[in-house]
Image (cartoon, rainbow, N blue to C red; front, side, top):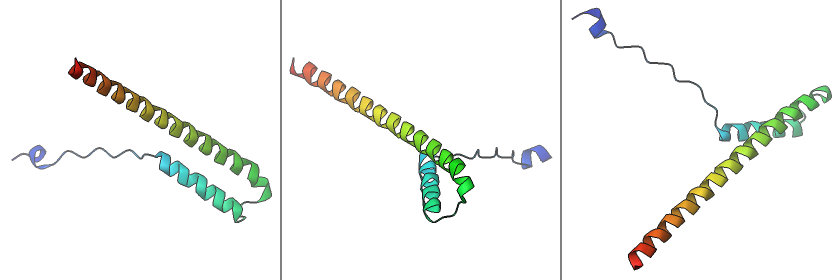
Length: 89
């Protein structure tokens, strides 16, 4: 056997990912840390800006997911109505 046959191809590294739930947790951590006084006064504006950006992004993604779910539900109910009307004819 040759060396190429016995050596397995190296696996591609898995790319790190961040989910919406991770971002929700980040926002919650920032909120909790600020309530506990973990930040100095001169840091509050930048910490608040980051927290606001994370919250806006999460709200936007969740609204888009909700709208997509509603659209899928509407499309599914429309298909069911077509099937019923064809079956009734």
